Image (cartoon, rainbow, N blue to C red; front, side, top):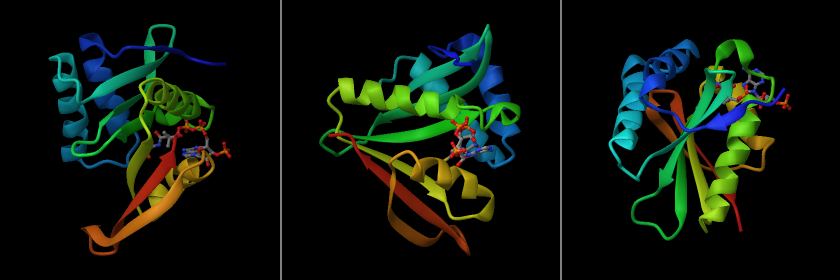
Length: 157
Ligand SMILES: CC(C)(COP(=O)(O)OP(=O)(O)OC[C@H]1O[C@@H](n2cnc3c(N)ncnc32)[C@H](O)[C@@H]1OP(=O)(O)O)[C@@H](O)C(=O)NCCC(=O)NCCS
């Protein structure tokens, strides 16, 4: 069943925080960052854009992206999160497709995603790899000793 894709508003702030925390993958400061980006977006900051995936009126996932400063038409996918209980049922694919369609429509060229090399991110890395993303770079020990930054990119042209 596909979700309806709609803007994320003030009314969804607490739900966004719970969804992000509920993945069990992110530290509390990272959860706080996701909420801060939503607040900035709702305050009119165009650097961050959000779309939510809804089942009826309940938000079950969201994505956040924005133009990468200092680049020509490169964009970062900052967050993509799906309710833990609904993962593996196509919501993330639907969100990613929506983000890529909007980026393409806006003339954006390259998508960059940063993730971690940790074992608990293996399904996340597989998600990107099977959706056309190339593992472009690694910075060893970036997040913590033994926890590398893994950068994926996708050419939209
Ligand atoms: C990564 C994530 C957004 C993918 O969304 P999703 O709705 O679970 O993904 P889909 O159902 O559309 O696609 C499933 C694919 O993603 C991968 N996947 C990633 N996490 C998965 C999970 N928990 N359960 C099942 N598949 C998962 C699988 O490779 C699967 O591949 P398949 O289609 O060949 O079976 C979601 O699992 C999630 O929120 N994970 C935790 C947060 C996270 O890692 N966010 C990205 C931070 S960089």
